[in-house]
Image 1 (cartoon, rainbow over the protein chains, first blue to last red):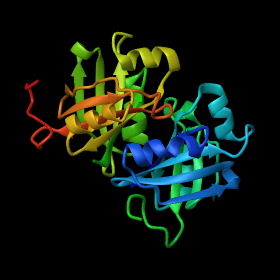
Image 2: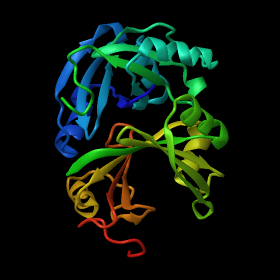
Image 3: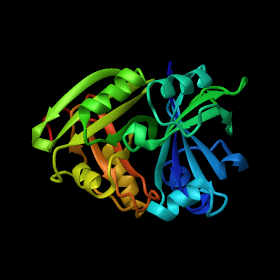
Image 4: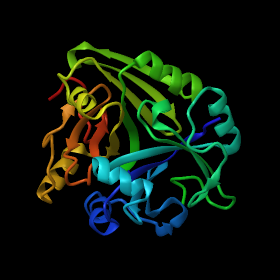
Length: 141
Length: 143
């Protein structure tokens, strides 16, 4: 079961150049910036209503987000849905015939996560996540 | 002031297949379906928590979404953010030198809305809207 839209990932060249638009110009608040080396990104977390924007700066050109930007420029990168059982959800999707990038969960910035191939989701890179215990739902921290 | 993310726009080439995925496989409720021949598209609204998925099936390249689909293929299209007063927000951004697609709001199904150009947003097409019936929202049919 999917409970809500956890976050939207936005690929940016650098946080230094992109973050001021979202904070100073749009007036949103950035609550955390951190490196997530296992995903090859530096992430800025920006709550917006009941969900969050994640600005993703690639840690190098050979990372998934680095390749995405080289290929099509910065912009909307992925959407993530929250679920209480990411492992079960990944298995269920696979059994539905979906092409998975992750068949078992891996560690993300704030939870256990897994990705589905955009080919199986009409061009949308789709992530599923179960937040770590103690991390509040998106939009509530 | 921007108060929440209202919706995410996703352009698709096959609405039946997209509904089978978002409604039946992912399990989100289909809350509205709009057949909009005058806008050259069908739109399905599915509820994912407090944010809606706006699945757009353009019929041709007569609309901005249709041209985007023709150029970039199916996928994530835009973010719809809700603001207290869309006129004031567009005016504020224009005053700050932000490039806009709409300097005055257009009438939509449930809200008045205007788009910010994706250049200043670092590649994201952002829609700002205020629901009808609120101070900055006007009323359906009014300019």
